[in-house]
Length: 70
Image 1 (cartoon, one colour):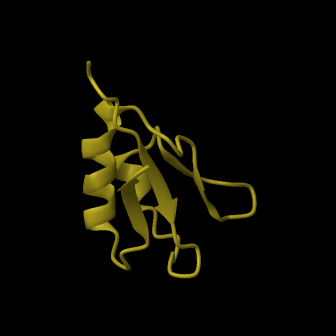
Image 2 (cartoon, rainbow, N blue to C red; image 1 turned 45 degrees about the vertical axis):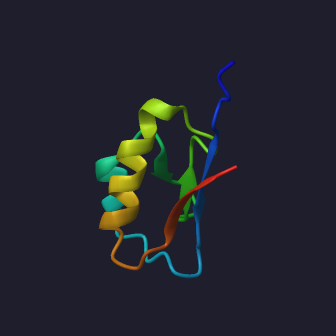
Image 3 (tube, rainbow, N blue to C red; image 1 turned 90 degrees about the vertical axis):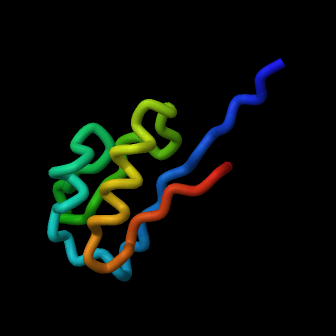
């Protein structure tokens, strides 16, 4: 029996400066909303998106993005 692992994307909006680096790396996960705030499109992304999200988190200049196990 295989246990399915799930992960959650979180963004600390107090840290986020809306530079958009994450959107460039993972546009299917992040976008800017009408209010200019960063929005998460896939809060519980499938496993095939994890690498891109981890890359986006690593590239975030303020370390505002976290991908953690649920």
